[in-house]
Length: 390
Image 1 (cartoon, rainbow, N blue to C red):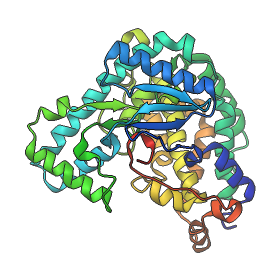
Image 2 (image 1 turned 45 degrees about the horizontal axis):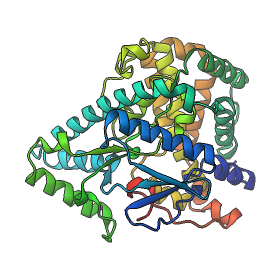
Image 3 (image 1 turned 180 degrees about the vertical axis):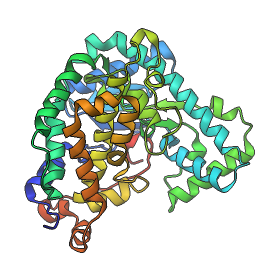
């Protein structure tokens, strides 16, 4: 049968995966940014973590929290610049077009700096865990509902009968042997290269203007510029949940646009020995969780919210992470693939089903089901400092 998106699928998407449901109130002061954290404890936790990181690691690490308004709105210092994610895209494209541009060296410097920074942040978060980790992450329900969504929408038949039992075994292992550290969410989309010359929201074609600005920086600035330009880590709302020590390094180094910046080995994803020792099966389990969360949201947008996907994930492949899970998990730990074979088989079925849409399925992809069922409207954005609109 053709793919189908039902109202219940849209309701689930809005509640669990639609990033654009987060309100970003307009700050009265243009030097400030407002972020609705949904409740006071979450706003207070994020503000506290930011204050501690600024005190211990320096002011050019995270934005300064100013105050909490309306019980849940965190007011932050606004950071002008470009997300590291977008800067990396430009550098890699410039390198492909002009290998002598210095773009590859700039990219390598920025990745090494953010890796070193993440190590320091993880060490501080480890000390803060008793204070900030006050909500267990509901991994079992999150993964089960996500995989069930794709099985249902893609009309996948003949799933392995033991896949839910395999998922239960996996979650039991994850919760017992893997989680030990607050989750930073260290994707390059949560880092801003703070240089005014990259803050080009006023341009009609922001992406082109930003790439031209990067080319100008490569020509006009000495190589050491990339070692000194401030890189600000933003969005610490995730620290209320515990995760593995490998999760943030994998978020940093194994995003579609940063894959290959580190060898995918268990040792590469442990940034400090005091946090724990490398473990192949834990590394594979972490990559499985991280890639399902990365890829699951993108694939859900692709299937359900076509308008949002075309803007928010304009430079992302919706199937990259789903496709790579078996290969990368197997490279980290062949034992992991054997232990959770039925669960991996479901992921492979999802990939194969989504890879080859029929003509009727392609027609479904042109429908924005968010508007069809809920008449939801929003202002979608792809690249703006601090995740908000200036």
